[in-house]
Image (cartoon, rainbow, N blue to C red; front, side, top):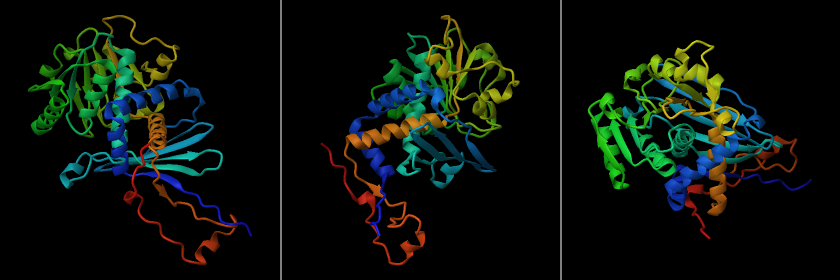
Length: 360
């Protein structure tokens, strides 16, 4: 009988991921994730894609987001519960898996709550770098919750945005964002309403969480050349943009079949024209064609972005020599004899969180 094959899966806890991001630098991580996303979007046609699977309840939604290419499979588990903060819980919580396609072996299990915030911000900034005016320097952030700091830092790092206008229905959220942006040395000002906040800016980012058909931005708030970055939590029955905003400019999406269900374009007829961003990145479709164009990125978050983020976290773990592991798969001397793993008690390994990152 051959010896049992030990399969260990790399594990990145929330604490470990945060430590890795601090070590590498938050801005560096966002830029690197944006590069990974751009690289994967340029390989768009090599991926087996599908819209995410969602289970809705009166309080929120729980979703699975799968994707694969010939080498790697990834999925993300993620929820969206806008009232979670009343229980001291995050609105969005997530984890993900990266696996080997050839064998199905899970290679990485990682937190994705923090990493999703980075990848969402990286995706926003990548889209804006592709679609917004090259000399854009100011942005309004409408919705000042958990994602807002990451959005601001991404746009500052990738587009040199240096002025931020802030508005949220919760003044405490705006005060929190203002404090954090000022601590990063960024210029920011809180406004009394959305209309005042978006006046005169180059880019508007809407990043609200409520699962309602809200109207955050109307067409009369737009100005020629503006780029709209609609990234608030999305699901059927949840919108942020008035229909006339979508009619005022050209609309770009990640994966059209999913955005038709969850994005702001769910308000539009099935033949409403949109362009998938990968087509612009690959040169197969135009982005901004004139300085006065209004561009809209109707972002809902797509599994390929999580695939890219998981690849980045795996690569960063390699770079930082992270050794945390999980034993998810029984070690079997005979792979056809699963019952054998019950014959003798297995040693229970110590918690991976007690280990340390070895830096070289």
